[in-house]
Each structure stands twice: as structure tokens, then as C-alpha cells.
Image 1: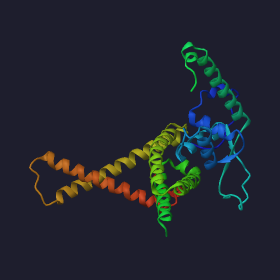
Image 2: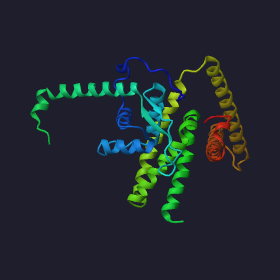
Image 3: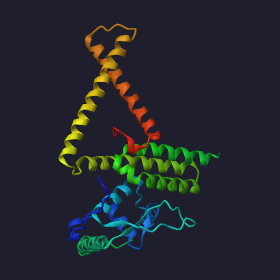
Image 4: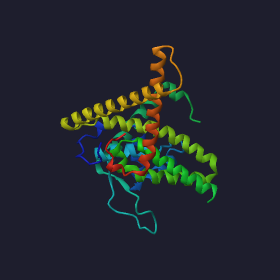
Length: 126
Length: 160
């Protein structure tokens, strides 16, 4: 296992479906670069507390995302007065953004298909 | 030192030792970041309450370590490597395993023989030898985990 980045393949669809952890991390990084703890906090916030990932799951997923070229490490370091300079920041690559968009579209299509069924239409949302 | 400081320091030390269970390449790359994230989580939990939230964090962390460590171990095992390195790894693992098993069995037999009791059957003797060998092995693993805490992981000869 290595974190060396390799050239990203051409087709974002080849990565689908994403695992829940990977999808949440990509969503957390979609608004800008963040360090590990900030990613964890964003995941909890955006999932309304339903998803809590541990450091092992987080960095295992980040390791794979770095290998696949979906995220990259930011060269910039925070101001030591504001934040711990030892923190590493990660950001979404262009290819990672395309994969996230493809997964979002896939899930939206699934939701649309599910909503068109009689069983779901009969149930009123709470 | 307050109870919170003590709990934080102990938690970080325990987590640091548990990180030894991950494959070495993963550890070298992410160990410091994981420690920092865990420390931040502990501080968060201690701010929100006292020890109960910290215990809840530890339960979540234990599950996370077991699952993610197994996943990373599996990835390290099946990751493509040059054939030469793969063959060397197999040979090294086999030789090291054989040496460890031989010494454990020899130690177990030695202890079983030196115990002040008589064995009525050969089976009883072998069971006692195996039990002593297993106990020695457990002690060895515990010691290696403690030692790993004080050694530079890049310099390890055998990667657990």
C-alpha cells in the first residue's frame, strides 16, 4: 500500500458505486480543503449525526482516495497562530469532483425511480 | 494533574500503542494524523461531559480499529508487489514463523518437564506443553506491543 498518486482513469463511472465513507468524505471536501478532524466533523454535521467514522476508517478511505487520484494533499500549511501547523490538509481533485457528481446523479436517479413506485407514493413523508 | 488530563493522556497512550496493529506503511504515513484526530475527539468528549462520553468514544474506537485494521492488513496482503519481494516475504514469514513455533514448543516442553508434577498420560504432557507454549507466545506478543511503543517503527525488522 502506498499513497503515491497514480494517473486518474478517464471514466468516473468506473468508481461507482462509492462506499458510504468515501461518499461522505468527498462531500465534506466538496466545499474546500480540510484536515482529518474537520472532515469528521463535517460528515457528522451533514449526515445529521447518523454517520460517525473513526480515525481508522477515515484515513483508510483517504489512503485509497489519494491512490486513486480523487483527492490530493494540499501543499499549503495553516498559520501556526490559527491552527496546528502539523495538520495535513486534503482537497478534491477535478477528477474527484467528477466522480462525486457521477455518484450524486446515480443516487438521484435511484431516488427518482423509487419515488415513482406506487408503494412509495402511497406513503406520505413525515 | 486533573482527572480529565489523566484520562486524556492515558487514552492517547493506549491509542498510540493500538496503532501498532496497522500495517507499517499505513502507520508511517498516517500515524501522527490519526493520533491528532483521536486526541481532538477525546478533548471534544471531555468538554461535553466527563468520563462517560469518553467511554462511548472508546467503544466506537475499538470497533473502528478492529474493522479498519483488518481492512488495511488485507489490502497490504493483496497489494501488487514485485515477485522477488513477494517471494522474499513468503520465505521470511515461513522461516520466522518456524523459528517462533520451534522456540515456543521447546519452551513449553521445558516448562512442562520442569513442573513438579507427574503426567499420567502422554496426552496430558503434550496438552501441558502446548498450553505453556501458548502462554509464552501470549507473553511475547504483549512484550512486543509494549516494546513497539518505544521503538522507531521505521527500524523494525519484523513487521507485526
